[in-house]
Length: 350
Image (cartoon, rainbow, N blue to C red; front, side, top):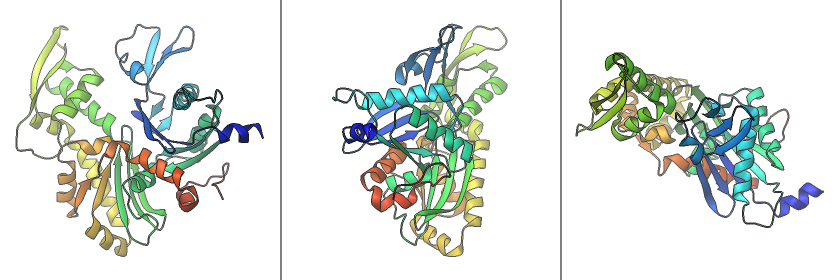
């Protein structure tokens, strides 16, 4: 009864709980939070010092007793308590300034399609512990397809490739369900690591993760580009141990990323091979839709198009597609309830 009363004045929210970034959609208001999934913890006192953007600025710059880490690894909760604190922070931030001091919202959370029942339960339990009244789960590729306004409930094939921070989800969707899917542990974070490894092996330079990510964003590509781009790579010289700067170009970075990009493309081909012929015919006509931050890598759509011989395009605002989709499900829960993940421990709404 108490929960129901609090729920009446709470704001229902959709959460894209990503490895790299968390986005929060509030019913009737749209996306109100877009912050890194990073938490800074004081190891001596177990006190949380910062969450989100403020915590990300601390990565690689903290003393020994403070750790700025991500509580999710490859789309899965690795630290339950810290994830719960992060979710509680976002839920309370949404309700800040309202009269509700104890928010009890209904929450829809996006999850990777390949995770286990135990991992799904961890997401649900962490969200309930953070203050949610009811928790519904939706696969991120399904939410992304809805966010991209694809006709997921119709008897036609929709192909979505969601390249996030920790995982790449590839799925064929038809009649409100996933027909074929594949999840890879290769995504944005792995591309950053590829650049770190390349700098270490080829240039004898020790790089930080943030520097690698900045280089990936500024000059990274998956397909040859017309204009050769250059960027400074700053790190520590492996030989002398002293600071060093090397100018690298987009061809070098494309070489560094080539193996991971090839694995993603091969996974897309594998999913197409497993797809029923009628749905393949639909996809040949409509094309492959790329979503997620990783889809912004220059030329990735051209590479997939060349290898699969299918039209490929990046959806509008791919970073927010999952959160937008979760929001659309919130707004039209009765019509879209069949797309939610049903589990042994939590029923979908009737």
